Length: 148
Image (cartoon, rainbow, N blue to C red; front, side, top):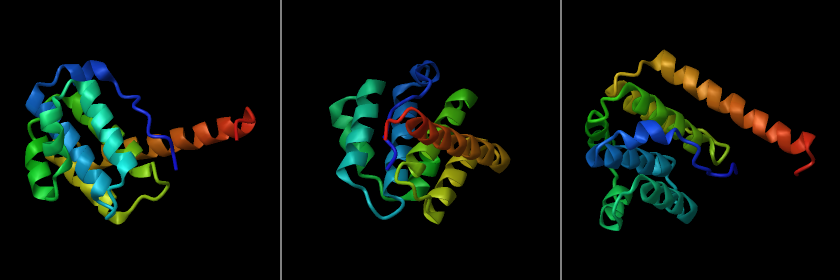
């Protein structure tokens, strides 16, 4: 399993209002559960990201209790900043690959979220391929520098 580290561009996220940040995190939460498993590591990761975003603890429960794709699709339409939308897609791809298994449900959900924010499928695929290349590169670094 890949380490779930937050390496997102916080400059673009800081520009989002609270509702946009909640939408961002709801998409994360739903994606984490898309494969049918929403384990404690994933919940803790999302709580950590919420804290980093400055989201109140009261709203974290709202973020973690999402079970409807269509609700999320409507929510992410609030994210009208292109750079933040691309950042969300990137981070969703990282999260989807964290367990080393990308399910069809995860892929479809990322596509729906991206399209709801105006990101075309070719751009989503480009971001996903970049994330995969990056993960491979990080794993190779562990071997090269004998960190295994």
